[in-house]
Image: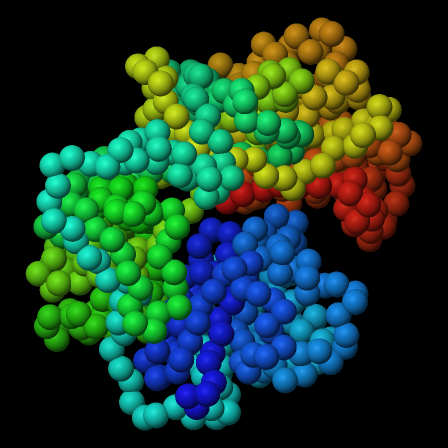
Length: 590
């Protein structure tokens, strides 16, 4: 790639995976002496595409085939009908999608983007890459050969100088002299205010943090309430609240000890020469090591392949270099999966970090660790029932692998640790539209299938609809046992007595044979056919994405067949028609 050309890598990322892949492409370009910029799609001036020579788009798909939050403005612009055909005729491009084939809209955004760029006259260097979490080797099973093909095409067009070069860090740490007094704006309150301005969030006070499972139940589930008085936040049933967690104090101390870093030492970050990446706006200036590690670096995550690719440059002996090279190669992904992903081993638990401090690579911290990403939670309450409040139903993630230390979810563990009875607890949060939309008609019934914490958005819907005098609410709820994890039991009973709710429950472990929500759906085939075929009811599923959604869909299609006297193909077509009309919606997660 001649010096007059620059490779542009644009990414749309929701959880950070697409960003990590885009930055990996950027590092590969630097090693090949290719000038490169890596930019989030909504941070790029899309009108400049007409003057770009070569662009790689890396994008995830969210929700029901939606683009990630940081590419929605780009998406709206690119699909303007007023854009002339042929306007991108000078652009060579490649699209790499990151998705999961267990979802119906697999890599929908990447496929649609590829097609739209062709419509606008751009030239595709190679077919769209469709990385799949379900691949035997994970997304890299597709990404690796796709990148090999991409570089063959790209370097044939723009040959670079021979050889590879070591990668500089994106930023350099400039440590400040010790000070005896912190600036006034380093207080926790002002830190929250800074994050609030940057992310359009509101610093809410936690009102309560209540366990709603029986003390003897294996899983800790919390109903957490936040006070949003004065925020002007408005939301409807189906919307989600976004919260960015912090690392556990023990993990922060461990990393600082491993790297021989003083947690209170202050620094400023400066981009390295030629780096296109601006200093992250969320970091204060100056910043302490503690602030960086606690609130920004995702040190508790399972390291990605890029982590080992970078460490390979600093290997101190042949054996270490060979192992890191294996973890960085396409052939070594099964070994890497066995070492890291299967046991959920974090970067802190690897054997490499303890040696990094004396290698002098503190400047690479932001290259090694991704940024902590915000988590989304279905809102479990309605403003009509709980004014100035947001409630979430949170399962605290904790499980065992072959490692001695139990695995913990970063956000759920952090939120569960906050105790508003011991003093004021402030949590920055913001609300965004979710994937579920409920009908506005007063006579339209809704059928909701929400086992476990999947019931959260349906509690919000039932509260909202009953406050608006909309009855015809049917809920299928499932859990392990009536005494252990029957969330909102008394609330459902009260609404049943008031004629506001029809409830069907499945307590899977309360009898010898397991009973799940799909069994209750099958039992109510007649009612469901009546509501859907004659009263235009809407059908919703929320919860774990493993077997439940498919099993419920199969039970519903069988109900169409038995009650409607239609064929298997006709039942499938009927469900598809409902989905296209917005009468069948699902929100599932892994």
